[in-house]
Image (cartoon, rainbow, N blue to C red; front, top):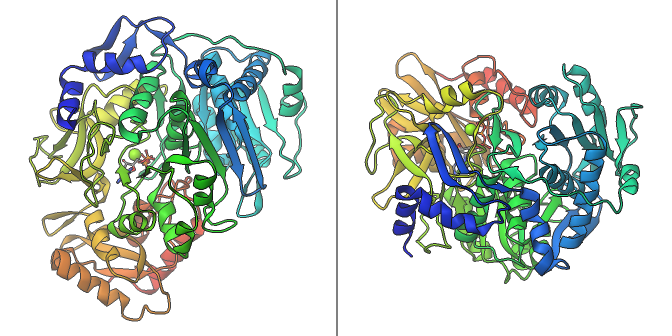
Length: 628
Ligand code: ATP
Ligand code: MG
């Protein structure tokens, strides 16, 4: 079938289309209605149906693939590699579910998971799903303050953790941060279940803290029946990365999510049961929820959980794993590829990558030099895909399982099935045609798998996402983009990052693309700052590839922009820096750069990886102010 017909049917006949896709998963009780949308923007998918995420990810495969590997947990930090077949995964999940039940966790209760990338984190997520508990996974790198606010928001009955994670050869203690967070939080969990990895010493709080190994021993042979839940039952809460401000608690359903993930595996990721998927993200992010845990397992594939950096023991480690586990589908992020790009390219040709069919990249703009480099190095399709924590699965992608359409560098492709994507003028709400810049929006209903609401705050869901375009109830992505004559979308930056220079609106991404075409630029961020004359001007922050050759770099970069985009887009300054402020998921925090450049307070930067980077940049700006 052609992409066009496939997509058109998904929009014009959602009942027929999604009714078909729903056959990809197991329903314990069939649904009565595919879509219930009488109260927009709240969509209910597969109403009346009952299913279970854990059953679909694990139990369902026992008949055909009990002895096939389901989960490989690799740590290059502790030098451990553990593999679990579907049967073994089933046993571990049952043990974990039994521990939860024995400690009073019931359907609808929240369980907060604050864990490194170890197999027990996967058991914990699936065990919650098994008993109908709602998990809230909090990225293991967050400090006590961020953790405390998530504890207060979700009010978990239990927290599952480990005493430490590890990064770059060093143990990163979790337990003291968790103790501090619980101290700070107003709502206290009853129990803390801790996986002791033997990495660091820690203190135990009697009556509250449970040792996982000891608890597991008590429930070795327990089997916990699957709790069949309504399709609309909440499966989890997950916070957005906080790149643009205070993180939002995204709430997701069960049945719609399972169907959307299964459909995405078939039509976008093209993974087959029995194969292996390797997603290099973290379970603390949406990519980890969807494509490390649920989607590959629902699809009967083995999945790899990886703890460590892409560079240890050397820059070939990921490709070594591809060879060893015959990975067919790999999913990573542009930021990780840029890290590899600085290494010897020989690492990419050293291993047998013949099992690999495609590399998927998402999370931030995939710049042309990075895309070409990785494509050239591995000689496989590189599939940029665009989505958000809110949507749970790609909104834009070349859907290779439907039709292998050509890739265009700089574009994540065309709208995924189920997504009625529009480009709108953000001040008038008018729909724009080809080659006009506007805000990317989705006409409701959001397809299955997308957020149901903001956890505990329906009003915030409506006002934050659906009421920003004048005169329309429409979901805003807060991303700025453009569509070409073939219907391919290009992301030009966040709506917050659009610069208005003397009446011309420019996405910071456009200027970044231009600057990154210079051979001595390894990374670049552009922001707009206030300017008395022009309204706004662009300011760049560039990390050079060769720090020894930067004397004339600023002038060269300005010239590059002049030639490619015109003088109007030329940044007032391009600061040469050694690092950029990033969230822990690796995204550049442009709003913080902008605040510092305008001499303002950067606001909530709790999800930022290394706060010293911003302080350094502040000093550089103070010593070399923007000339106006
Ligand atoms: P917050 O909403 O809390 O500010 P965030 O938007 O960074 O955080 P995520 O949901 O992790 O949180 O990121 C989604 C955003 O990432 C998208 O809205 C878009 O700006 C960007 N993004 C994701 N994939 C791509 C892509 N392939 N190309 C360009 N941008 C992308
Ligand atoms: Mg966002």
